Length: 580
Image 1 (cartoon, rainbow, N blue to C red):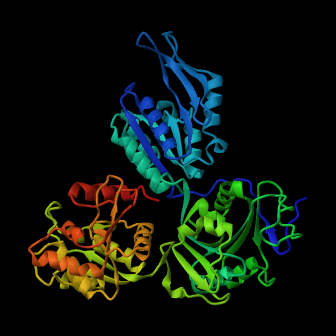
Image 2: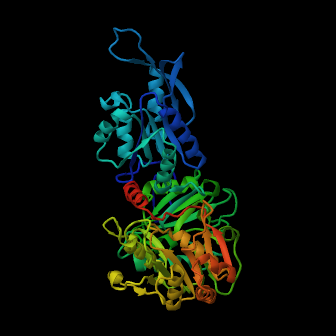
Image 3: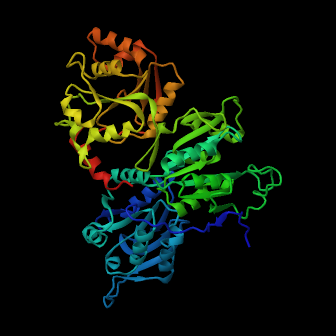
């Protein structure tokens, strides 16, 4: 019988099927009969795996001889196992078009089972046709996947049956993509990037709802910081407390309690998850529970099995859970919404696990063991995401003519509210001051932020930047166009971090397509001299300023979504229904 530490409740680490509702997504991969749907979806599988996504499911390639269809094979995408699925009936007396083989049916059902698909990001079902609409073949598998699996489900469907399939699954968000269109693969990859907790770009588990706290050494006070945040936010939010003990060597010295502690030697298997039930024992986990966590879990895990351990915990609490987690090593595989690291005010020593992840810290918090140089009020929790209120100003450029859009883009509705309100809401959670650069103060008064008009009208965005920089109360200023509807906090923190460690006047990012983004950039007030010099000489281009001051370029690694045309706006609105 497994020993459970006193005050803890044993938690099964066996995988459980997560409860899923809106997270389910359904894609219909459509095309005419024998038009190459399976070939194109096989290409999608290869690209998705190359991006780091776990793909499972079933392919059913057609078999031909002398251009005549003979039948289909079944391929299990987990291991490329292949079996004959069906042969075409040439006997006119047969009522069915195909005869199915038991071997292929067994392989297909196994490939689409809960066990085979439980860790998948994408599940392929090739194909969903008349038999499934009639309740046979893979219908039961698909129904089960949509009811209990958190993956993106892609059904290969003949074009003439697409509407019937949509009616069958009318309760699930559904998107139709043409198999023959090259951009369809890109659209599925984009949906996966938004949908999966694994980010394809860096193979990390993305958990916006997690605030992770690491430390430079022992007895620095990270639990005190976690408790302070739980006291502040636990009254109005359900927050899960997590403590991770990473074991490098099962037979080595315990990182938690030293020699004789028993944490490492008592570990059975690769990891163990226990739930704290005692609020008064004085243990770190008990203190987290007493401070306001709704539940607290302790993970003991071998370092090489961290992914396995955190995945098991997410099966218990859900990937969308709001949490505060104490760990250094977990940052190597998890990208949390916010990562703080604590160090002693009288020491610059960093233990090895801290040195490995120090570069990821959003803020180094200095502690004397009981108090910190970071006030809890600078931490924000909104819409299930953690943010850090920066001592900087956000400047939203809203004074453009919107000529390509044909109408005022700042007031275009996104989910029932103007796009600029969406932008203000995102930035207000990250910056202590928000300014709107525009000449129509009354128009934006409903937003509740200061509107800064151009000192000289009709001089373009460079004049707007200069005017807003003069009005800003901070040296560091993040300038952003109002037509970027989704602003990733990580990108903001990345740019601000570069600014903090550089004496550059301007930090300008480049994106995946190699473009400069001067309206998603940091401008110090020290850039004002160069900006005013360009303006006074009749210049209007922001790039003209770059030759007159210190500029640093950074690579964000991904393109920003700008809504410059009505087509881009409509596509963004349509895609919102497929986001998690």
